[in-house]
Structures are given as structure tokens and as C-alpha cells.
Image 1 (tube, rainbow, N blue to C red):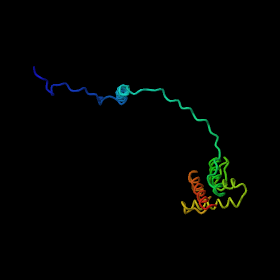
Image 2 (cartoon, rainbow, N blue to C red):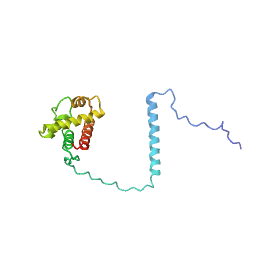
Image 3 (cartoon, rainbow, N blue to C red):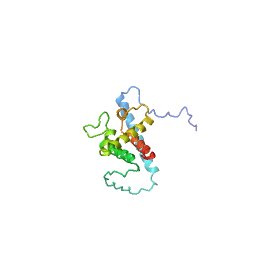
Image 4 (cartoon, rainbow, N blue to C red):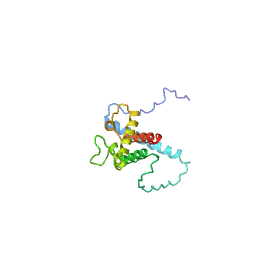
Length: 174
């Protein structure tokens, strides 16, 4: 008995589509092959993960909605406290640029300071001076708060300016 040689063994079946069939037919054949592969992968996944214990999923209760409240000012000075309140008002009312306020009620930084100063113009002016100084530490080109505010594309740098100004007021005990 002779052993079949490699040359006499039958070649593996050609799984590629003949070149003369159309695109639609090739897509259907490829889709069928992918479906078979996905089914095989799903079975392999089930076999490979059968030993993992399954527990009922944890039920997570949604937290109760919280009513936003103004946190006490962490700053001990009047100007720092004013800047903190003005920052919070900007977050609540919304931020705008190129105007003191817009039709939606959003306000600019200077208006936020003036509203939270409750008529104390001197305190509001001192807070604006500190805010401008804090802004100019990072943006040397800024000449005024409105000109700097007009260049911003989001509220994030404005809030950061308020934070830095409040820290500056606190360190200076103003």
C-alpha cells in the first residue's frame, strides 16, 4: 500500500468567490461567512465564561434630586466673599459677553459683581480691580474685564478668573 503524497492529496476547497460574480453576490457570501464566525465566537464565549458565577445585578437607586444652595463663602474677607458670590451667580444665571446681560438673563462678570455687592459701589469697584489683576496675570494683553470677557469662548476661564481673584483677595486680607 502506498501512502498518498502531498501532490496527490486533494487541494483545500477554494473559499474565495469567483471573480466573475457580481458585487451583490460577494456581499451576500461575505455576510454569511461573518454570521457563521459570529455564531462560532458566541459559542466560544459561552464556553469560556461558563465557570464565572452570575449574580443578580445590583439595583442602584437614583439619588434624590438636590436643590442647589449657595455654599458659605470659604473666603474670610469681604472682597473674596463678594467674588465667590458673583462667581456662583454667573453659574446660576449664565454667562454672556459683549453686553451686561442678554435676553435669556445671562450676565457678564461685572454685572455679577455689582449685583452681589448690593449697592456697595466701592466694594464692587475693589472686586473688579482684583479680578482684572488676576486676569492680567495669565492674559497680559487684557486691558479691561469686558475686552478680556469678549475674547472668551466658554465660562470656564471666567470662573477660573473669579477663583484666582478670590484667592488673591484672601491672601491680601482685603
